[in-house]
Amino acid sequence: MDAAARRRMVSRSASRARLRRSTLRNYQRSVRQFCDFLTNPAYGWSDECLRHFGTHPVQVVYDWNAATHADEAEGEPERRAFTKPELEAFFDHADEEVLRVRGQGRKGWLPAFRDSALFKVAYAYGLRRNETRMLDLTDFGRNPEGREFGGYGTLLVRYGKAQKGSPPKRRSVLTVSHWTPGTIEEWISEVRPGMRHSTSRALWPSERGPRLGLQRLDSRFAAYRDAIGLDPALEFHSLRRAYITHLIEGRTS
Image (cartoon, rainbow, N blue to C red; front, side):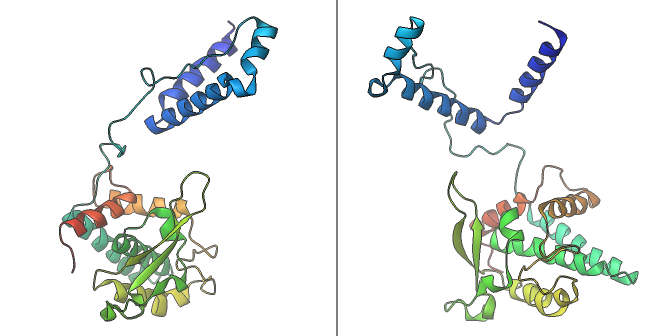
């Protein structure tokens, strides 16, 4: 084996070592299905292989040698929700960043306000990253059973997480926190019109385009988290985890 071949083998081994458990199971499922196809008498591949190669294909993935899991949840153990004090500190820092930038007379306070409102909305409705960035102005509606929320009683999530090969799932989420409508209304009515791309339908326009990108969303979240010394294990999805956790704990304020 030459040096180039050894490097390729090492590279492939390193890549496999970084695979998630769910990815490995998807690979083995594909192999099992392919072997099922090859060994199915209806297709005649076994006879063809015997005639040409003197042997026949067999199934190589069985329950006894396949990777399995005992729990539907496969999240990394270090991933967790925000605690309430951590969440308050995160939101306070986001608000303080708006005041700091605006106090310097810089126009950058507009995207800083957007980021602060975005993180609060993501938590208020338990949204994933792409669900949050793909929101439009028209996605809010009234809830007849929650008239106190006005025009922000429900949120239509149009880009929910999809099953493999399926379109995005839609769902409606009810507003449960009384501070949510005020946060959204202030952003839409008072701050968002000052953005360069405010004519777009996107709820969160960026400084350079009609819709905020995932990279900006991730970088701003990490910057705020690190600035106040929060656990590096906290990620954007931790806002969704916190939403669910706090609902279970009885958060209604």
